[in-house]
Image (cartoon, rainbow, N blue to C red; front, side, top):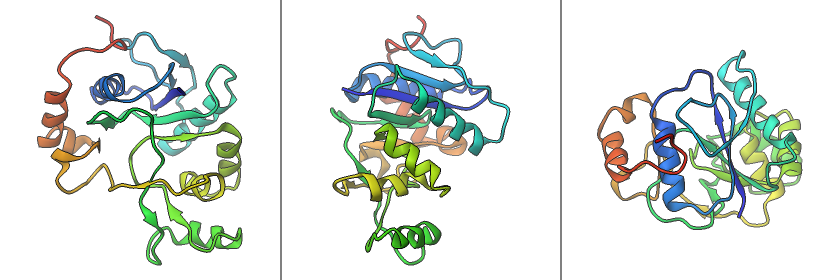
Amino acid sequence: MSDVVYVVGPDREDQQLRYSLRSLAAHVDHDQVWIAGHCPDWVTNVWHIDVEQNRGPRLNTLRNVMAAIRCDQVSDPFQLWCDDFYAMQPIGQLPVMTRGPITHSELRNVAAYLHQQGVAEPWAYDALHVPQWYDKAGLLHAIHTGQSLYATIYGNLHREDHGDVVPNAKNPEAWQDRAWLSTNGTTWAGPMGDHIRATFTEPCVYEVS
């Protein structure tokens, strides 16, 4: 099993992380849990990589990811999660997930870069809002290309197979039946958030009792 790394921005005391951890504990195989960035006081039984959160959201996230890559104690490979990802059904071992082939109208810049690297038919791994696993060397290379969509760079240059095609977890159709969900402020306060909270009513091992 691989470790899980959550990247958490500054002062994120909202309850989405709580329910994401509950879903992880219930449904996804994993070893240690790490939080890179801001660690709320109610979290327990995790390892914390303290990263100063004094930049904008995108740069804070990137610095958190880089800190996890550089931490020798984090497993290689590891699973990368955000605090608003939820596994709604038993998953077991985390699969590779993709949106499918990049169309001509989306991710144009990263598709052009991948064509230059010899990838004839690149696939999309960003804007899925689901966790993915990465090996450290491959992820570091993807980041160092300078392309902002490093999940798609990694998926095309460092994965042996495309993975399972899944819908965008943040806005899927028939979301009540989906294995993966992701929320924003509006959906967390609405029916989707109600569904997630009703699914995971019991505290997990990662919450202070």
